[in-house]
Image (cartoon, rainbow, N blue to C red; front, side, top):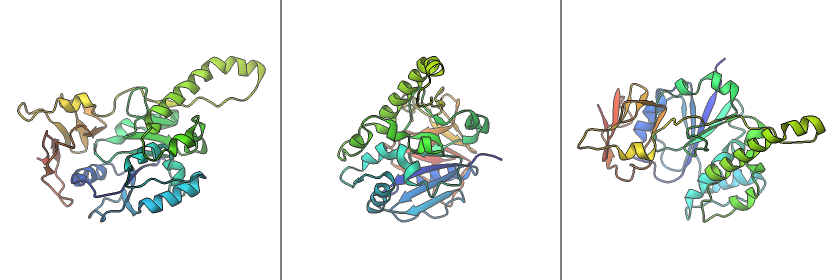
Length: 284
């Protein structure tokens, strides 16, 4: 049986204008689910695999404080702090994730390609974490096996609670802190394996993590987008392509989004092709 995957987004505030493109790309991935926590008006016509859940900062803080066992107080004063909490979402929403084999966090400034082409069951069998950046945890896409070790992995990071409780500062817990911890523990595991076999003792097992290739558009890719030369990021019939035509698992347009002015289709439209230019998201 195919392993079940759920990706979580917590997004409070006005939903972005490009959401019809995001939602369309989710529709083309029926074997991956999304749970999106919002406090804005619910978007129309969501595909069956996208579930919008009404929430708020107050609700999130209450649930997170209960599940994590320490006070959580993220507010509109510094909403970017939510990024530090991405690796904790598996624990915070564990009740909603009970039927999934893997859960993950991702961003919303994304158009998805063919996810299962890259995240095969064979890959899921052999790894407990999968991220889209080489040798680094990616905040915009990372999967975790839905087991206690990985839902509680944040606790293993030295000084985790103190870092997570600095409310007015993003400390890179989701990317830098967790990346360094995994590198350290996997290195120690290799060097200590013989010692443990000979002398016994306890050690935290290595984390089987897949971070061997780039699965998305980098900042460099996005800087190549050019209206005059006709170099665009492209989604076509469920697959994503870099400006050079090479296929990617998803398009992350974080470096372009502040320049984007609009989108030329709505939620009910189902174009077969989309391009991301320097200034717009357009259907073809």
